[in-house]
Structures are given as structure tokens and as C-alpha cells.
Length: 135
Image (cartoon, rainbow, N blue to C red; front, top):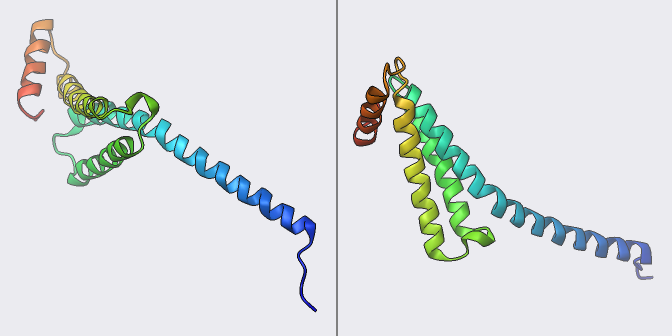
């Protein structure tokens, strides 16, 4: 006597297979939508953090930041949203992230250890932060 699959189990198997396909599509869509936002947030807030607190900080902070930003950038380049489908747009996006990080780090470094006393001093500090490291 051979075991027979019930019609209920067969239909349940088809439903589960369809649900797995939906979940896979949703996961790919989520990665495509989240990775550029995560990379942008990491670049901006990383610039603020390293501008304010990089003097005397731990090395692992920088290593963790590089790893997280690298993963977010790679995910954006490998699985881009529809706005970044072409390679030139992806390149501009990566360049914008790097420039955004450097600029926010330079601006934030002006406020360590004290705030600038004038707008001229702020401008000099920003230029100093752009040309050299914040410390």
C-alpha cells in the first residue's frame, strides 16, 4: 500500500511555496530600498561622530564604521533601487557619500573642543577640517 498525499497537504505545499517566493521578492525589495538610505545615514552620522569624537577615540570605532559603510555601499551597488540603475548614477552616489562624510566631519570638527567664536573662525576651521584630519 502506497502512501497518498492528501489534497489538503498538496494545496498547503503550493501555498507555502508561493509565500516563500513573495518573501524572497520582499527581501530583495527591502534591500534595494534600505541600503542607499542606510549608506547615507551612516555617512552623515559617521561624519558627525568622527568630527566630534575622533580625537582620542578607539580604533575599532573607525573599523566598524568602515565595515558598515562598505557593506551598505556594496549592497547599493550590487542591488540598486530603480533610481540608481545606471552605472554612472551608482558612481555619483558613492562619490556623494564620500564627499558627504568628509564635509560633515569637517563641519562637526569645528565644534570640538569648543564652538567657534565667529563665522570667520568657523570657515577657517571647516577648511582646516577638509584639508587635514580633525585632530
